[in-house]
Image (cartoon, rainbow, N blue to C red; front, top):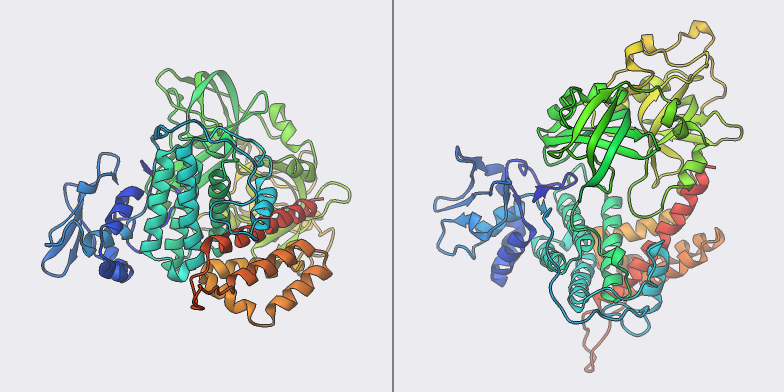
Amino acid sequence: MSIDESSTGGPGSVLLPAVAPEVLAEAVESLSGRLRKKLDAAIEGCAAGAVRAADGSVGVRFGEDAVVTLRPGPSGVVTEADQAVCGCLLAPRCLHRAAVLGASPIADPEEPAPPAPGPEPVPGPAAAAGPGAAPGASGAPAAAVREAGGAEGAAKGGGLTAAQVRAAAALWGAAAEALAAGVTAGGAVVQAELLRAAHTARIAGLPRAEAAALRVVRGLRAARDRSAAQRLAELTGAFRELLYTAGLLASGAAGAGLTGAVRRSYEAGGSLRVYGLCREPVLSATGYGGVATHLLGVDGAHYSVSDVRPGGLARARGAGAASVALGGAVLDHAGLARGGLRVVGATVSPEGRLGAGRGVRATAVGGVAWGEGPTAALFSRPAAEAVAAMPAEGAGPGLLGCDVRVVGASGDHVLVRELTPGAPLLRLAPAHPHPELPHAANLRRIAGHPGLVLRVLGRPDLDRAATLRPLAVGPVPGAEHSLRLPPDWLGRADLGYDRLQGAHFPGDAEGLVPQESAPAAGADPLADSPLWRVRRLLEAGVAGGRRAVAEAARGAEPAALAAALRRAGFGSAAELAAALTAEADRRPRDAFGRLADASAERYAWAWLAAAAHLAAAERSLVAASWS
């Protein structure tokens, strides 16, 4: 196991070791009902009192008579129940032990879990309604599958065992309950139910569903801790991914691609010749830091070499000049980003990461300037075409190169226009927001030189209109008013490591003048469309649970939302939002006329349908903003 780089914990959680999800789930399950009600309060602040001993164990004291001791294994993760002990009389079914485990970061499993043996594969008819969907709710699952499925689709039948379908159904139910609870009521008990279901999904061979559940749990914890790193939009997206994955798997209609890969497997890549593109700092909320150097093969394939270890910001800043641990290559990451490698016996992960196996041999070779050799293809077509060719689902967006002219600043963004006739305004946003990394400072310097032309290499932000997060910049060949970088930089500056100075820019006296005035704010089709109302409704449901959506349904907001959406041509969005608010406010009664608990699963299907439609609509608007 390893700590997931995107995970977050509460205050002091860097000191506490990571805990396997199933260990935490078992500890919470063993508590009595009375102790479960006290768990959230017990978790608060207990991590701040953690003390690390000389033998590597971590202790947390509760009063005079109880000390919880965590003794992680060689991997640094608590993977077994007996690695967490408490000295009180109720141990191991005590509140102290569960609280310390609940305050610890959640570990990510790396080793594959063999699928549980089961009977013959379950047939895969395209089910309109998922697990627990009641009559009359079938439209929501169908819409969710159509909008969220993308290339995966629901038509691929078969391939799932009965054990996998059961595990997915259990995970769907836990996710629906967590969504109905929201952040306000999604405490440790709700999270433990999700973790238990996620562990079952892992055993059944459903790693994608498990990973989605862990992202939701981490998001809930960060939101409840009011972590600065948590964004409600990210948690909303995590819920959408979890519900979509679990719901489609539980229907039995999913193909094998939706189960996911159980681990990163490196395969033989033969002999490679790769050239450096740029370096990117890597910094996690759990105290890990390092660097990823992006490379390009002679055939245009993208590769990377990463070095991420404990150490946080200090290591992320220093790793940019650390030695490259790959096949004995005598080269550091700064040199590799501007040089190249010839690799014999290469091993490559599906994501393009180069492995440092025993049989790998690497020799440093000279690099190429941007726009030469295989790198020319990165800058050979308009940005709009490159973005349109990127997959809407699956892996994150790849690198994109373009030549632009600086228009001016807009908040913390730089407004630029591509050097292509009729190109729209683009936004350059910091690739990493940490103030100690030079991304934002470099962009501020660039924004201060309207009229400057430069070559940009970055990653498009597909969640925002026409936004590029640059990793490196360089001069445009042949341009009169462009960057002036030192010769040993090989025509590029890594924005996460190199700091642009005044000498790197042409002076105003040399005729650098703006080509156009910077608008107060560039046109943003996402912000200008009424879809923000749907987004706010969905995020309110994630933050406050079903009750928050139900309360919104009783005011004047639903009518205003529907009217605004229909005027803008978003009729389907209006219908799905109305169905969501109606389901949230539904109060069924039993045969004796008494109020009964409304179905969390019907509500989850309605929420997923609206969320999936919103994601598809926003993707369309973002794609249009680039052209």
